[in-house]
Image (tube, rainbow, N blue to C red; front, side, top):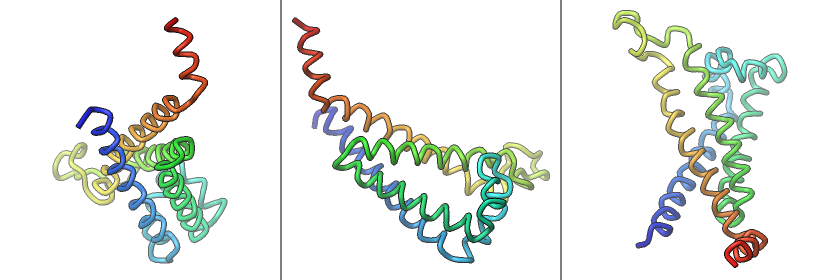
Length: 164
């Protein structure tokens, strides 16, 4: 299998995984139990704390659910339309930048009995997975941009002119 095919296959697995994650996590946001679980995360998130004054607890959860489903659909559309996939990947990047920035601000996130940082406790270990999801989002964005530019007829025409 050549390098391009391997990269495409890996990207398809990553894209599918991200679509599933956004579908399931987005679904949870429609229920009160999830809105309550989100309180310490949103309250301590420097980039997302604005949502409670604007939407309230349930409204913020619903807003996140709609956003996550939209991102998931855009990532899914990326299988056929690279520009939509890139927009979805940007949304995914924004999502995980927002959640990763919560980590240093999460109260009681570091085990004092173990000397504090880097001994994680409470909600911090759950958020650490978002570092990987952020990296996957950046990878998908780069893949979508690269594929989009390879498909542009104007770019191919320009490349042919440059080689003559």
